[in-house]
Length: 302
Length: 268
Image (tube, rainbow over the protein chains, first blue to last red):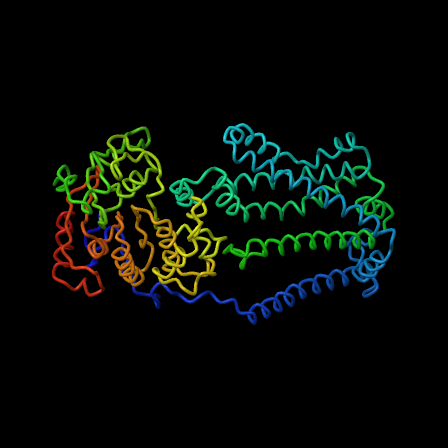
């Protein structure tokens, strides 16, 4: 035990730190200046914009090397790698072609339904597994095994089960996003602050009260992290399903265009997919900020 | 080892001075790496109705363990705790608890954090809102009702936790190093506030700290604890006038009591 504390009657811990203590229990509230936020977004757009422009420029220059200098670059795959000046018009062409949009609508539906079914199922089953200790013990290893299995490999099985239509793609999308949501739900509901648990115990809270007032709200940030991952996973599931066997959807479009060496179209479709993924991710982000405004890490994250 | 002076005969105290809480020969043994570890050995003490008693001692003396046992959150290996004459074997509504961490629910604003015990116990009706307004005023949190925990400093968070403790009006309040993670200025300020509130509410309080000055400033009596095994070395009465104000620390009795406790702990 530390006995010489230069006059402070504190055992084992020196708490006579005089620095940085301007107020007595009433520190000013952390500010959220709107100005600084605007300028932060501005500089973000500027930074990311210059990266994208620089990347596209290098790509364009490499692709146009023959026209510029008369000789081909030996390492540049001209046929399969279109150039930005062709991809961008192809992108706008695709965006305005009803035939293409119909395929996108199919993929979007597969992704959305797959996400709702998979994430919803993962959340509900996660609650059940987390709250029933015997269940948790029995199922957790199995869940981990499934989590470690590359679930896209189930694609052919689902095609066999649910035939070529949308159902097999929805099933694959749902299966892929089921596990991250379920695992995050289990972890979020199980791991609570020790003293918060003691507090509920000392208040003689019932299991239901502890679930509703403590476990469920404190699991929200973890569950949301799982949901955000699952959004992108659902899109992957839908596309992979279409690659395996389909006659509609963006996966089918990309495959057809690639076989016909229409690489500008391939990249245009890819760009559209990225935009769908981004839109879903941003939607999840907005929802998260709305629901988890109280969470300290929100301001820094995203 | 000095025996506790107020056991046995204390039950014959006149009303108001009777023991609200009796700890009777409590022993707690934990298992650590297959070896038994004696956290508390034969601890006995009485706390009178309305008394402010502090457990002070170095880390590992079992003071937090003792508090958990008194709260009914931990059943001791041996001995018993009696509150109002009946043995405490599980948490009770008349016992309130406060921790070193504020343990506020981040998703609830200040008011809804304070109302939590009333919601859990189902005692929000009929006068819950008035009761909440009263404790907010008593702890001086007016103007912060709608704030969320992350918008508050550590000191303010502990004020909210204190409100949450007071709102259900428990007979016995257990405070486990509630100001342990605060800086010295905030701690001294909140000590004055707690002394004022304790004098106003006349609650039976058991307070845990490793800060001797804090213990003397707040308490009617200080139970000094030692380690290996965790036990009460002595119970020191604090002969300081009430109300306790910052100037109380300048009195000769304050310094004498602090020094006496340091002697008991072998710090000189």
